[in-house]
Every structure is written in C-alpha cells, then in structure tokens.
Image (cartoon, rainbow over all chains, first blue to last red; front, side):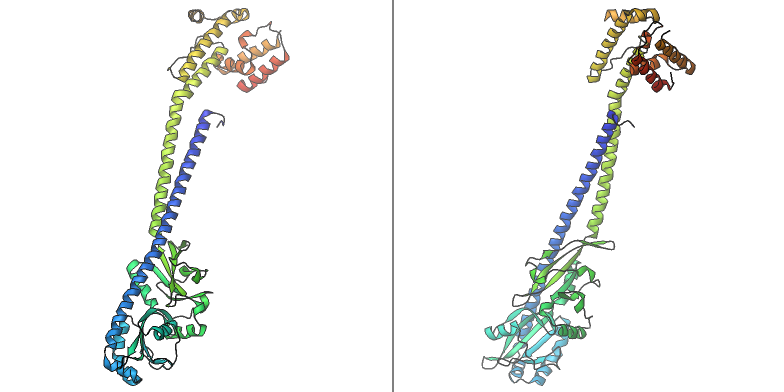
Length: 402
Length: 66
C-alpha cells in the first residue's frame, strides 16, 4: 500500500472517523450508563429512606394505639401502681405472643422516677430491676407524655413508643414502653422494593460485651470484628461483602450518600446509605441500600455492542461507497491521463485524452488534451524526431485544427 | 557511436524480446530519465548526467543493467 495516495489518505481518514465514531458512541454509552446508574442509586437511597420513614411512622402509630388501649385497662394501671410484677405478668403475658407476631418484640414497664427501674420485661421476664437511663427515659420524666423514636438498648436497636402509666389520682404510676426492632423493617422493605438492605450500627454507641450477649440472645453470629467502625445489625442477604463501607457513619448526610458501583460475579450493584438517628438526634447507624442494576448493565452492553457494530458496518459501507465514487469520478480518469501522457512520451501521438465530464477533473482532461496537442505539434517540428520517428499525419492535422 | 544511442537500442531490444508495449515502456523510461528516447540518435552527444539517468530509469522500469 502506498501511503501518499489519495485512496490511502481517504481510507485513513475514514478509519479515523470510524474509530472516533465508535469511541464517541462508547463514551456516550458509558456516560449515559454512569448517569443512569447514579440516578438509580440516588433513587434507591431516597426511596428506601422514604419507605423507612413510612414504616417507622406506621409502626409508631400502631404501637401508640396499642399502648393507649392497654393503658385504658385499670387492672394493668393498678398492677403498675402497686409494682405488682406477678400480677402485671399475669395480665400481660398472654398478650405478648400476639404482639410479638405483629412485630412488637420489646415490651416493658418501668417504675416512676426517681428510681425508674425496669419493673417487668415481657420479652425477658426474669430480668428486671435495672435502670436504663436512656435519652427517652429522661424525656419521659421531663414531659410526662408520649415519647417516640429510635433508641439503642440492651435488647437491640428499636423504634419505640413510651408513655406514662397514669395512676388513679392522675399522677404517674410508672411507664410502659413498646418497641420494634429496626432490623425487621429491612425485610419488609426488601419485600416491597426487591433491594437488599443492611442495618449498620456505629460501634461508638455499642458495647462489645453487650453486642456479644445480644448476639447470643438473637442467635446471630457475633460480627463485632468484621468492620472497624460499625456492626451489621441485620441484613437481607447472606453476603457481607456488599456492605463494605470504610467511611464514618456520623458523616453521612441527612439525605443519604451514594457509594461506588461494584460488580460481584455476573451482577452489578449500586449502593448507598442513609443515616439512622436515635431519639436524641445522634447518628447511631445507617441503612445500607444495595440495588441490583445487572439488567440495566446487560442492556447497556447489548445496546453498546449493537451501536458500535452498526456504526462500524455503516462506516465500512460508507468507506466502500466513497472509494468507489472516488475511483469512478477521479482515480480512473487520472490513471487515463497518466497513461496517455506516458504513451505520448513513449511515442504514441494518436491516443487522445477523453473529456468525460465537465467537472473539475474534466477541465483538467480538456487542458491536458490541449497540452498534448501542442506537445505533438512541437515534436512535429523537431528535426531529429522527423528523421527517426514519424508524427502521424492525423495527429498533425488534429494539432493544426486545434 | 553514441553511448546514449547504444542504451536506447538495448532498451528497444529488451522490449521486443519481452513482448512489451513499446510506447508505454518508452514513455515510462522517458518520464523517469527526463529524456525522450525518440530524440536519441547515433549522433546524439553523450553527457554523463543523461547516461546516468537513463541507466537508472531502465533499471527501474525494465530491471536491466545498461
């Protein structure tokens, strides 16, 4: 292949166009995919956060209604006021299995201040008499009203509703609290969205021994050492690897954060997390959201392949057509001019250049034919040539006519 | 005898022996050497530059050493 021919230059230009075109398509597809993946990730995080809020509000509303109907029972109020643990257990124990099946895993009564110790734990009746001293307890004492929110306790991290138990004189006989493990929410959320979730709790708010003990109670593996700054309290997938996060949970902004995309086996996931705050407003953990975008990724790859292939085929067909057109309009006619010029120099004074069109090359053909006739006429008057090679009469005549 | 004319005769003999298109080959050699073969005759004066160019052109077009 000669590198200085127009054919080669056109081919190289078309090749560059093909590469730029294919590269442009790849870049556009990549940009589009990144954009969509980020949008999906953001949507998954914000959607999960909204859903979490809805579930939280729904459960608070449910527990508030249950609490109020329970506390309208004078026998329960009297048992609390009398600090009669056995009577209270007798009255409430039959209800606990039903509540538990509805998600209310934590249910306990406390004595009023100033001692404010646990009177009865329905979920662990043998353990009582301890003071909790949590933010919610302080709020109960301060407001003597209903307090709701998320709170870490020995039984785990739960959304809770606590309220005073009134005595017969309208005072506070004690307090009752119900709670639902936040870990339960993620299974509901997975059922509704198909995403995977993980509830991460900051170690800063947990005690290593407490975590080990509660792991035994909840029959879960003690995963304290899995991550340096947080523990996974619950998750909807058996895989721990998709919950990798090495940032500070406290630094996660209120609207959540989208994390990097990652691949695992044949699947592609986008990830993000949003903060979980306790009743005091501390960011005690985060909900990890994992959204599978494998279908989108596969579809993008398929579309990318089709687009790149179709671009390459189109440009290849275009290249062939352009080369055929150039060959017909330019190259063959230039070859003819070169052939005639060569033969004239070689002594062929008869072959004329055909003017095949009035285009730019045609103008050149006409000019060159005129030049050829002048050249033949000059040769006709050169004595040395007249002695050796004869200029045909026809050529002379043609020259004279022109 | 002119050396240029000798070279021209050898070129013509080669063309004839190989059955080539004389006008085409002579044209190519003429264009490459800058010398019209038709102008070369036994009386053509030799000059080293013309001889060298014709020798080079014959080598390139016909692959012969003159």
